[in-house]
Image (cartoon, rainbow, N blue to C red; front, side, top):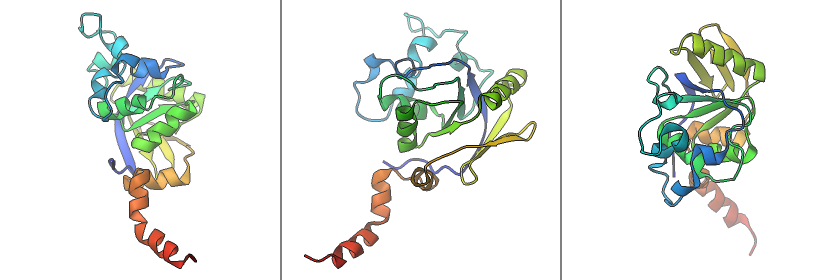
Length: 198
């Protein structure tokens, strides 16, 4: 399933300065019955967003119209816990195209890269700077430049580089998942196979 191409994203951000956010908090287990990637955004952080009677919790950031954007800035160790790929689906389906944190759980990071959400790992110091900038001005914008592998706080020009696997980077720039990538090089695969001795 192809997804949106990712090159340069400029957006305000939603701050979630909570450490050790696990995948059950991102998408509770009771919402994992569906097999399509659609509809999970409605239940992103479900138990933090809603009361038992389904009314929104006014003090949770996703229910606060002060904050918006396509970038979620999370606390350290974001996406820990079980390996459910539905957590990445929920983040994407809600509308986020990047998650910024000072540390990601490896499986969550991989799941994000597989479906078009860019995990941007930065230093704890820069993460704190970003949180403070958003607190001072919720309209603060970040620029995430995937080709250059940089993230910039536009209000000050402060910038850091981030790492990403080259294969995953190429796929995200082209909007490919693994199957799309193979389809894209199908002719090369066929040409190589034709040269093999039988």
